[in-house]
Length: 229
Image (cartoon, rainbow, N blue to C red):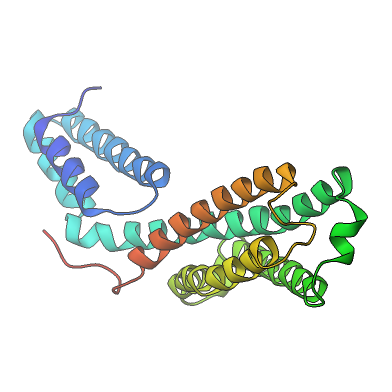
């Protein structure tokens, strides 16, 4: 059933008011529109005119200022869940992929012999850090999923994840840069093409993490939602 002007205007205003991941946002808007259309159709069946039925449906549904805060909260949770899943999957995967690359494409033994003393401790420290971030991502994913009812302020979890990425990524970049450029060890770029490919994959993952973290911080920057009509 095609929507009329009142409902379309309302849904357009709601869509402009909401910010967050595109998929969940479109799903919310579509769900709101379908609910309004169903209500308007029922009211029209009771004898109201089309425009009057749509106005009554919108009034019953609530103004954008009344509805948007709840929707926006859900979008911030969705953004946190997306970042948590990204960390849980990509950060440990990066560690595993580097380990596999070294095993499949080993460098010359001399490369290990000439690497500085700090190379192995830094490499292991980076692996541990990445695994810890992956574990935190998994915990946050559970908290924002099945554990959502047990946490009082899910927005804080979303914000924590965003801050975690922005705090830890420079550390990870520094450690990775030291391993890649600060030594002549097995991950030096010179003479080790597989390392170049893996580095590009790592940069792609980091870019995705930063994008998701920026979204989380943007959605939780101010509490919760400005009133709007």
